Length: 219
Image 1 (cartoon, one colour):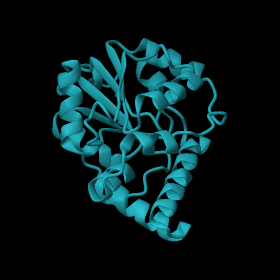
Image 2 (cartoon, rainbow, N blue to C red; image 1 turned 90 degrees about the vertical axis):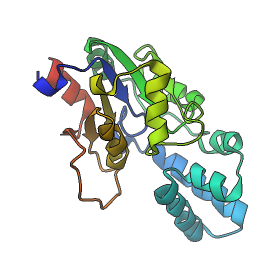
Image 3 (spheres, rainbow, N blue to C red; image 1 turned 120 degrees about the vertical axis):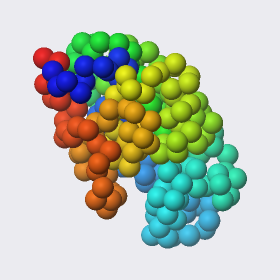
Image 4 (cartoon, rainbow, N blue to C red; image 1 turned 135 degrees about the vertical axis):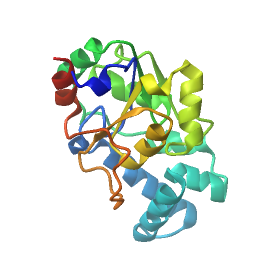
C-alpha cells in the first residue's frame, strides 16, 4: 500500500459520477431537468437556460446555490424536481461494495445532492449498507462544495481529523478545499470535470476507475 494512505481512517466519497461511472449519464438527466426548470422560471429558451444554469454552477458551486442567492428559489422544490429521474441506467456494483468493505475505518458519502436522492442511488448500486452516513446539501446548510464551510461542517459533524481522511471526487475543483485542510485527495478523472484549471497540485491520486483503484491499493 502507498505510504500516503497509511494514516487514513476516514474514507469520504462524492456520489454522482464518482460512485458510478460518468458513462452511465445519470447526471445528464438531472442537467436536463435543471435547464427545463430555469427555462420555465425565466421564460427563456433552452439555450439561454443552459447559459444561466452553467453560470450559476461556476460562480456559486451549484446551480441551486446561484438560484437561491439571486432569486430566492425554494431549495426543497427545486431538488425534488431535478432529482425525479429514472435510476435504471445504474447497476449493482458488487466489486465496488467489496472494495469499500475492505477499507479500514469509517466511510461517508459527501454530496451536493440531497439524502433521499443519494439513498436511491446507493440502493441501485448495491451500496446501501456500505456507508455510515450521507452528508448532504441540507447538512451543509445549503452551502455546497467547494465552499470551505461544507468541509468544516463535515469534519465537525463526524469528528473527523482531516489529516486522517481521504476524499474521492470527480470534480477536481472540489478537492482543493479538502487538500487545504489536510485531507488526502483522489480525483476520479472520468470526463465529468469541465474546468480548464491547469493547477492540480491539490490532487494526490488520479484514477479513471474508482473500483479498480480501491482494489489496487488494498488488494
